[in-house]
Image: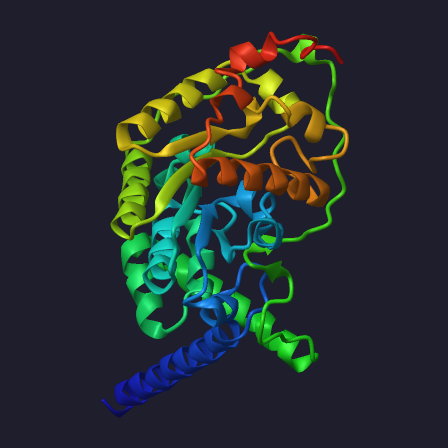
Length: 342
């Protein structure tokens, strides 16, 4: 009996030590901002000032520079985005900022991925960073409950502890940051070498097709986002950010998704802008120097696109007609004069 009690005591002490160490490491992670997506302090500092919110995934995180919008439009904007951002992540961060800021416009970045990405199949990779972007135990526990299944809790635990260990090592070596130094207003300024994209557009034209299965949870999630914005009195603008000409030529069925978004926007009474169909896009955002891969803009490209977006926002706010600036479809774009020329 004494031996059994002794074993229980040893196990109890061991488990307590594991819990305490886990909490300590997690705190190193959560109390600092040592990963590029952690921006809670900047958002807290701007609370009550932001008038335009941009919400989306990595295409936006690398593609829209709020500082340029602010300079050109005289507004205060913030880019609430993240790599592989799920609908639950978008809703949670957007809701928090809408409730504490006088937001009049929300730009919702949408893409093919927004509709066909399957959270159940892909797992929690897009949700894990949100735990590091929220502030307070209550917010994090609430998100853990809403976004993760019980079977994913071990992954969340491992993520918190492993990032905590990395953060503690940074602390020991004097490289620990209390505030994010990589992200500014939600834009991640990362210098990446541009990949040389093929220019044989006629040869690759329509070689691939994307799966046309809209995940119901994604449609529901998009409707929740639109409703959330409207409930808070914000104008909603759905925006498809520019992809490379190579990408737009390669995939044959992009019109399927463009038409889906057009119908969705009409049904819900929101604006829809597809910048791949902007008639100036090819000239202002050439493949040669505007992208670091086929779907993400580089720093130069994002700066130019942000200027294009600022002009589009002015058109909407001043109720000017802007439809003539865009092609009606990818088919019309591809068969425009010399589009398929190398």
